[in-house]
Image 1 (tube, rainbow, N blue to C red):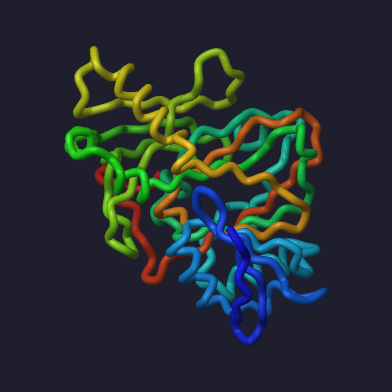
Image 2: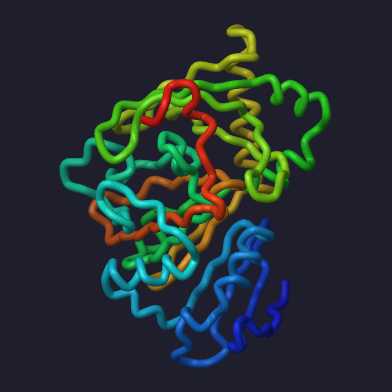
Length: 291
């Protein structure tokens, strides 16, 4: 794949397609600020390609307030009890896997909240070393379903899953969602799934799944088949962080997770959620109500 020079908002930059999906966007000049790129153009690229990696730009994101201001340029920020910016890093006495060094299962953000954010805006404050793990994983569910055989697609359309997790940090509760849903913006069929914790792997605050539409005797085979397809390299991208990376991801069309990383490593990622316009209500909460 070769890079192309394009203009976004009056500023030239290099764009290189990533395998199997996503775009790497780099500055065409030294000192180029990330804020010089047109948000509307970036938004459409993120919707089309799933993941944008903005690397090598000057961001000035030296504190949460500056990152928040940039997020506001993208749209309405989804606020949490801690504010706009979540600092994803290891905590010494973690009670949930988000703040541990363990892996994070595939999921979609906002699944236990009243609204689903359209985009995740990530900023890498400190990257782990290349041999320390901690890559963020993304699965292109639209492409997977486009290439899925008709018989399996028909079976998956009958599946609903209820998820339950204790609220020990900033999320929790119970939701029930079809496995396949229409993308709220594009209308394409996408996949909603929070994979079960892996057996034999240390994992804080495990969630439970209750599967409808698959006979009990067939559920183990169903989950194994689903796992293999989600981690198929044709649809699976693992992002190796570099310091200063800004990553935009389509939360409504992708699933994402995290590889485990070396305990007490420097890994520190900040995350901001950008709401859809209009705001996307979370249908998985009905009829339980907001969790």
